[in-house]
Length: 180
Image (cartoon, rainbow, N blue to C red; front, side, top):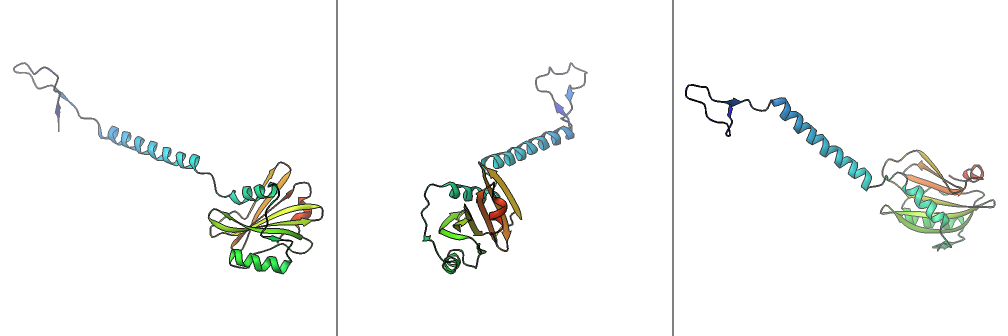
């Protein structure tokens, strides 16, 4: 197929018509590919900028509840048996809970990422530690840690549950031993 230039002066009698070749096929494909890649990359970047990563949400929530001014507890100074029964009611299955030398100060139910979670405040030695546990149906990292303002937050998987402990960084070796 040949295109005739519309603006060109017609041929003088006896001359051939002035014909311009069509755009090469590879140029059409290159422009289409470039446009598609630009839209695709722009969409992916917009998604990553607009929505934060969800793998550290439990860590940041646990830190928030640890530094919260006087917390409001659903249970105040429960026994380990009371805490276990309450946690089963909140989370639906028997969650891993700290035991041993930890004194339970209080517990309350919260919602993180539209799922129920249990927050428990403990006293281990002279330190107060916040423990958060949630049943998480998604695959999350086996172990994650962050350090923020003298606090250490550690998250780990235990069966279908994700557990987070937050306490003073200086004594993290001591209080982490009491975690399940």
